[in-house]
Image (tube, rainbow, N blue to C red):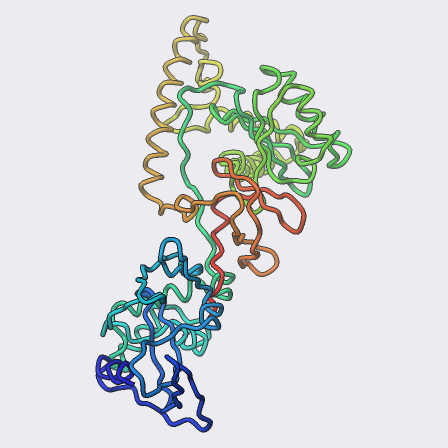
Length: 445
């Protein structure tokens, strides 16, 4: 009884001992004691987690007792080796003391702890998962004295652990800049993707370092064999042979076992784009619009030429003009700027071409480094850069089809740089780290 009265005093007299219909008899120290009433109390475990309990009051000076039903409900247990009350969901351990064969947890009343976690969850659900900032603003407008600054943080914790809010969170950002390579090397990494011009499939190939392009219409449909034949004819046999690495998009032909077997036999390492990893090819996808625009202009200017010739001229023009600060792919690859057909000019010799190519590549390294630093400073840091994903964790993944929402949770199988492999319904699938976030299970309340 004394403990109940002390609790009511600490809380400013807000609590009352309520009468109960059926009295329960408790036995302590060899004596029996009837229930006087029932009192609702709030036990602060942490600043964000408060247990609300209804305890029976008897005429005896005994502390509040935490039974096994309460410990099981909130997933807590007493570690009798370290003398700690361990809260599994909250990830905290509270020191306890031993006395007369019992374990005690002592706490002091904090007047700033006014809303319990279950109450905030109830408010969050009552307003149909409104944002924490809006809920807090409503509380403040209502001049609710319980709405202290800590309440906003607890509302954010409620939203972070809410399944509905996690699944309907906004689309994540993506990386806008990558660390450039130390030098410009042709045919080190090649970007390959399929695009369409006037309904016809086109294989578009872009060298990652020099941005040199090649493209051709596919023959015999869009089979893997047609893609391989086009790659061989417009790139491998014309320039420097097979590249060291190939970065491909998530197309059906470029992900087939036959395509990967052909590249493996040629000694080429394949980089795959993850699911929902749009624009992961970088220039390989940005230059689609550039090539399509040039193709349409050539076709409009010379309506009598064939589509194949229009595509060849568009690629020719793109290799002469694409690139930062006037550093065209032709200059980076061949050491010579495209001649302007106004008057005859003498082409430079081999030594002059080599020097011009070396100077242009050094300038290209500077331009790319500056452009990527500017992009990194200009754009927001994507959420994936701050996600610590480890194998064995449960995560949600953002899917655009059909409803643009987060799905899961799925188990993380492996992590490598910006790539995450997930066990998705007994299938191993790769995603960009910007498309996943750690799943927070709802608390037991």
